[in-house]
Length: 180
Image (tube, rainbow, N blue to C red; front, top):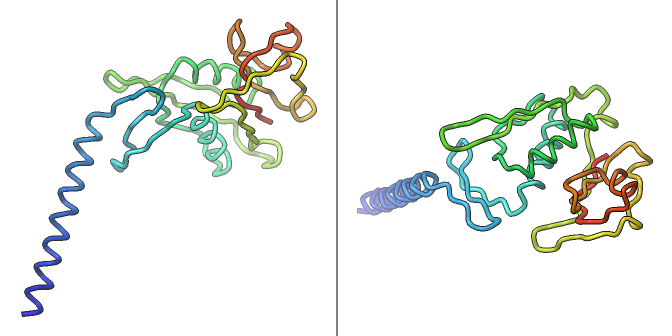
């Protein structure tokens, strides 16, 4: 009698897991964006919430460099991310990037520099602005990053630029991050 109860419990658990998997597949098919919170599914069908997409992209670049990877693939496309990547490419923090289309969706594939010296080649990132708390600075508050070896990313009224360029043009704005 106990064996039948155990089997019954196992079958109930399997049914519960199966229904949960079906629900996740339905949600993953939607892949919807709500405000600044993006709901998407990775290769395993696991739903992920990204509240700060640019932060996510920069952390993916850092983690890939730490793992000695040459590419970061599957980054969800946005114009702002492309502008950040333009800056990173200009100052040689990334080798290149390309926009890939998968049906109606666009993704970024980022090529990284090979890591020869881990101390110099793996970027350090310090975030300032967050979606919940923007960090605005005057041009007087801008300073060189890591003794000139790094860049700060600032969003000004004239677009996204490095902090040393904004300081030279006497422009303040929202300080996104520093990379060195």
